[in-house]
Length: 138
Image 1 (tube, rainbow, N blue to C red):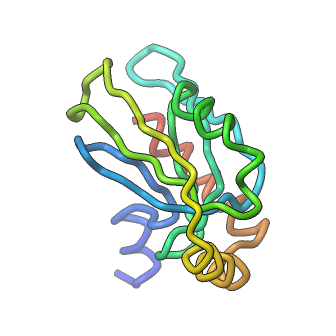
Image 2 (cartoon, rainbow, N blue to C red; image 1 turned 135 degrees about the vertical axis):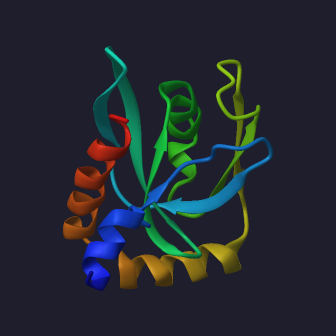
């Protein structure tokens, strides 16, 4: 089996989820959000794909609408702040909450902006959105 086939089998690294209690991520926003639709069982599911850049590069951060609204409330900070999201709630908990804050860290913002310049493209976003369709329909 080729490396590309293995990569497809193992799943995409361009998708980001926070699935455990205390999981946290720092990022800068790379582009506009994307509404993602899938089905879980027989129920239609909507999530939001947030194109972000972390220390690992460009990723599509997949969140629920409540978390998305919290991130959106910080839109005026996107140009010069790092956004931090921390999950509070165990896996599968429907009462999970997300703490969303804007960090004034010029050094980290500059580092992430450099990573964004190297890793974010519209093609990478399209690929991540396509990959997300398989994942959110499981």
